Structure formats: structure tokens, C-alpha cells
Amino acid sequence: MSTYIIGDIQGCYAELRELIRKIGYNPDHDRLGFAGDLVNRGPNSLEVLRYIKSLDDPIVVLGNHDLYLLGIGYGVLENRHTHTMQSILDAQDKYELLTWLRQQKLVYHDKTDQFIIVHAGLPPQWSLQEVFTYAKEVEGLLAGSKFQSLMNNMMGNNPLSWYKNLRRWQQVRYTINSFTRLRFCTPDGKLDLWNKGPADTADAGYYPWYMVAHPTIAQNRVFFGHWAALEGEVERQGFDCLDTGCAWGKELTAVCIETGEHISVPARKF
Image (cartoon, rainbow, N blue to C red; front, side, top):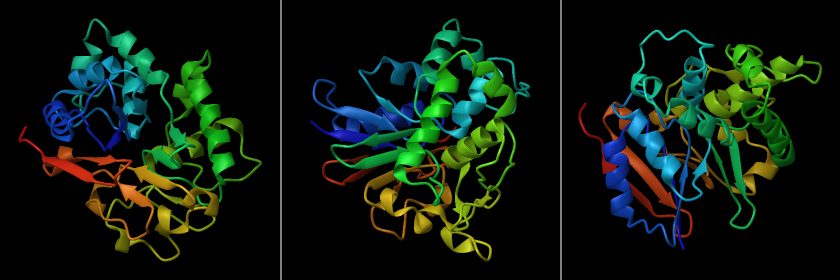
């Protein structure tokens, strides 16, 4: 049995199916995981969602584009048609797909093989236990009866720093932004949500989040996406960026957990 984790697909269905063929995925023996941003930018977000939903027990963590889809899908965010997800919004199985998406995780931890999957990053001041405490709170809101309140309160950049006296929805927003948007931060967890450049473009006092990760996080292998500008290169052992820019005309990449092998296919023009 092998487990393969795939980076940001962003609606690139043809590349996804080509990659799955290339890795020799066997549904009877293998498992697939996805590091978030399943949808948007690419041309076939509906097909991507339907396919992943059809898999037997996939590992899925949510990215910022997936949360954006939930926001417009449930009418909380304005549908400005600047996305490529209209096919999902027009689909007969729209709410079936959105309900499935709501049931997915923000962070996944495999205790046996000691690896973590998150879409963007993990705040450096949080231990592994704290990461999962805050992740489970938001996951419960996503899947539960307070989902609408979550959608109404999750958008925005503030707060950039974590304090114990933050109001609940401020805590939730910081948590979501960390797990789905983080690239650079200070060692005490102040977020920079604007810099999308390579690792060496950090402002003074800021670092790639993985360089200042909590020691209990660094005891695991960590797989993440969201950061195409890294081009798959991470200068800290044990941290692996799987976003290789498929939606930007580069590649879609998977990693085999058991061997560490990376497998990629080139992006197609759209």
C-alpha cells in the first residue's frame, strides 16, 4: 500500500488524471491525499470535485479557494464571476458537493507514519496539540449548525497576531488564515498575508513559516501547498511544498509518503 499526496490542483482535472495514471494508483491498495485548493483558476473544477468525492476515503485538507467556493456557493460572498467555478454553482449536485467539502479537514495528522498535511502553514507559537485543538474547532463549525455564522465571519485579514483575549470569531479568522493563507510570519506568529514571493523576499523580522515552526511540528514530516513561488524547493528538511504551479502553466506534483519520490506532470494550456 502506498499513500500519495497531491499538491494544488485548482481545477486542472486533465493533469490530475494524468498524474494519477503516472503514479500507478491502485484503488484496491493505495490512498490519495490532497493538500487543498482543489478548485478555481483551472477549467474543470466541477470534474475535480466529483472525482475526488468518488474516491474511497481520500485525505483532503481545505485551501483558501475551497473556502471561497463555500462562501459563494451558500450566498454569503458575492459571486463576482472572477473565478472559474461557475460549473459547480450551476450543477445539479452542487449542494451534495458543497456538503462533502464542508466535512473535510483543515489539518491532517497521520500518527503512524508521522506526517502532517496543511494547505498553507502552521503558526510557530502553536504546538501540535494546539494546532489540532484550533483546527477541530473550525472543522466543527464548518460541518455543523453554525456554518452560516462561520461564513459570515471568516473573511478578512485581521487579526494578524494571536492573543488569548481575542474574541471567538477573531480566533477563528486567525486560525483559518494561518492554515489556508500563511507564507511568512514572525517567530511569535504575526502573519504577513500579502507577500507571495519566494522565500528570500521576506520583510525584516519575518520568515517562511516552516523556518520558525514549533518543535513539536518539526518532529513530523509536513506537506503543504499554496506557495507556487517556492517552485517545490524548501530549505528545511522535513518540510515539503507540493504546490508546483499547475494553474500557472508549470506542473502538478505528487509525493509518495513511503518512498519520498516526487512525481510530476506538465500543465496543459487553457
